[in-house]
Length: 125
Image 1 (tube, helix red, strand yellow):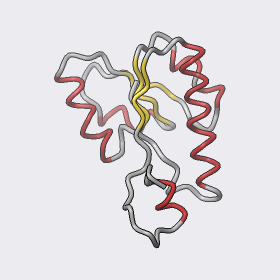
Image 2 (image 1 turned 45 degrees about the vertical axis):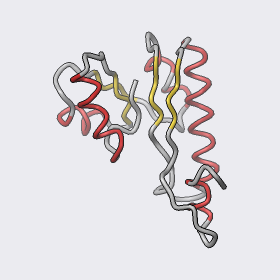
Image 3 (image 1 turned 60 degrees about the vertical axis):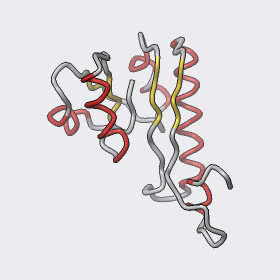
C-alpha cells in the first residue's frame, strides 16, 4: 500500500514500484481524483488517515505499507492531526497483519530558528 501518492515522494515512487513488478494499492481520500493519474493495474482505494474506520478494509491483504503523508498543510493543530493519522495507520496495519511499514514524515530543514511545523518535520528535533 502506498499513501501519499499525490505528493512529491509518493508520486515518484509509484511508477518505480510498478516498473519493478510490485502490485500496488494506493489509499486516497478522493479516489476519483487519483485513479486517472496512476499507472494501469494500480488499485486505488478510499480511506482517510484521520478516519480510523476507513482504513480496515483498505489494509486487508497488504504486506508492506509506505506512509508518505504529513498534515503540515492542514488547518488546525497539524501536530495533533499528524500524530492521530500515524496512530490510526499503525493500528489498522497491526490489525491487518501488515509485515513492514516504511515511514517518511514531512521533509524539513535542520535550522535553530524553525517554526513548530519545521521542527515537527525534522526528525532530529
